[in-house]
Image 1 (tube, rainbow, N blue to C red):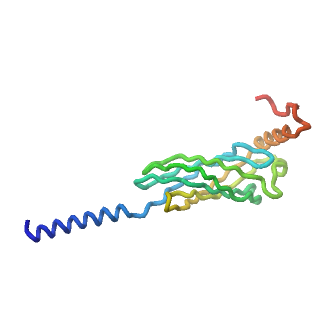
Image 2: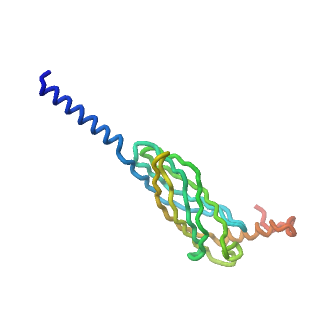
Image 3: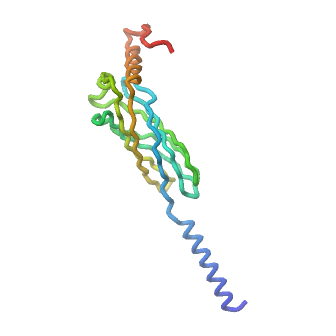
Length: 179
């Protein structure tokens, strides 16, 4: 092979390795979160549980992991219940859309309690403003999300009846309708 041919082959080989290195070291793309719903699953005198559903899309050629979900919840636009973090690892496969569900347990805070909101005869709106921490052992990114929903008067009524049954003097009384 001539010296020009060797130089051309070497240049081509070096260009190939440079391209390979650039692709291998490229910065991962953040996943995309599409909120689907936040559903209240239980209410009691100490707080309530909800399940947050989101569709996550990982645009990378490698798997990522949701390491934690942090949610800040406000009830009825004025009652700030604070922030909680759920650390439930969830795998996001490469180039795939995944439905993720995260359980969140909120405690009533300050003047907000079941009796205060149970007196309402209308649905009580709530807002969830949060982030999902996604990544791996050495690199993480916080991906924001927002959700809204309502706690229905029926959910509040059931919670109120259940809390009455928890009072020792009322135990044995059948306050809840048969299921």
